Image (cartoon, rainbow, N blue to C red; front, side):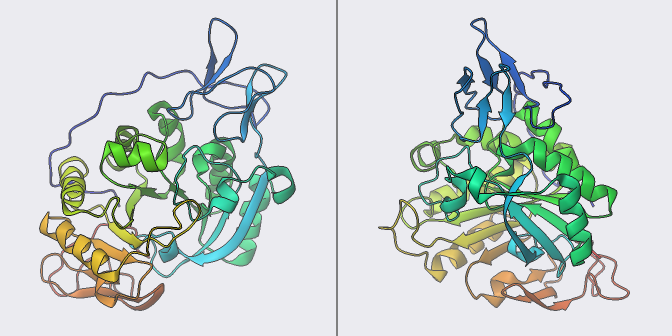
Length: 366
């Protein structure tokens, strides 16, 4: 089910498109071009790393080889395999209670000081840490394990986009759903080649000020907003959003109101928004964990701004984890952490509408 927006959509200016590189080698970057000096320029993300043979991009795992082309060095090299509930991605409106085979590779094109998967995203010994796994092998393993979806997560699939796309296609061929968990820091031309291969995505909206994005994440807010706008409004991919609230950095009322206003006006009121709790990690060990009260305050601000499906995460909050009917207020899905206690939308006879008032609830239901 596509998102139905009740608010006007304002499109952002498109990024200049560059033709994807073509080659029989699957690991060659599909988005690159060369400058007048012969340097290969990566067009996957807004950094546009300019590389000569032997040089690596900011993400570390895309490098220029002796052929003068940028390769995805982690293609076919996976790490961190685990089976998770889909709610852990987090996705609350996509096949609730289903299981997902999750994996990542190494490297990242952001520089988040609070990264909670930094041992993977900042890994430099990616060849030793990874295991060989082709797209077909991953899809076959997922079928064998009886999961319904495969998620590209732990580090950002943007940096291994070619590998993620090929794996997504192999999964779809076997009736599985590909899911991307990403920061959305991608050029729009590359995003247009990436999101149509995904059935669902959770995109991090890490805050809502340019200062926070540049100082704490090493990226730019506008680049991420452009991708969120595109993914929500121009694809068939089911999208949910997550904001990790960091005390004293992105949890003030003004920033939260601005974020929720932008979402309401650009992607509508029905895109699920998750507020999750920060814990000290990586280079932000001096910041305290997020109080539960901060998540509750953020949730109420979002609902006051008109967003209909707002959740809290990384804390035990039954009210903040429940899916409610926006019309009559009935509890349609009750969760306890990642466990589903009640699901009236996917139960036998359920059709994705509220049983009490028949309001359609946006999502992908069983």
